[in-house]
Image (cartoon, rainbow, N blue to C red; front, side, top):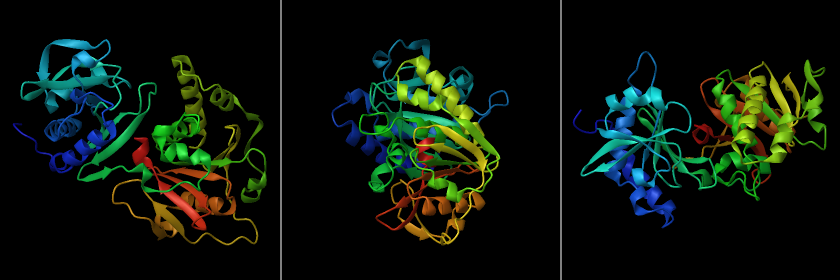
Length: 371
């Protein structure tokens, strides 16, 4: 391969270059910001590497455009490797664990893989290979945070440039904003990342599931749940709530909350919905949603996706999915102080919440924020 062959890389490299230039805004050294040609080369190599298999495994790789002298405690190769899909696929087994990035930078006019790093500065360009033909371009939110902000998702011929602020969520419950605008999770003004972690973990088990987040101070949600509840939790499971209150930043805390989140997300794989309150206490799982007597059936929802060019549309819930989506939309219409989160087996992830401004349920598809 002597040149780029993935057309989407060339088509969108300029937009991605503009995003990094606009958001870095003098806050990142110029050496960290790749030009369109470098972005095209990185995405092209990552795409073709994603289609190769190494010893029967699909490669999972994270590349960062970073000079080795800007990396913290880098592992440097004695002889840098020319950037290419075969070289990336061969290195994939060594760097598939989360948090390890292959460092790529210029030597003369060409790009080379110089080694690996675990720590990268804010606004450093990152492209992750998540599966065959599936890439995500992202960057760190800020130095003190382990979170990344997704910039673009490449899936074969389909490319989505993210624009999380394209939808006004000012009238949404506060818990929802940490998912729509993840770059602000954990600040004093916004909730921590517990729901974000739960959403990612719900997608990961690939069985589909529903998580209902209800207010802790009332039990009006019971009107929308079939009784008796088969898998009620008594007393409420509070380990996740206890960890969420700690909100520590050390690695031990992140490991502990990660294990509990995985366990809670596993409950959503059971047929029915999992119920937690807004204090993150687990109330029940495997519950069945029902329309309260006298309440109208949900017939339409406002649908949006936080991507460039995405437009709001009014659709019937059945257009978003099957029984799981319809029942979640019904719950959000009847329990207007609650949120319903739905993971599909195909990877889609939709949030349902009542919009006071629009006077109907708002369905927000957010899987591009969770990759």
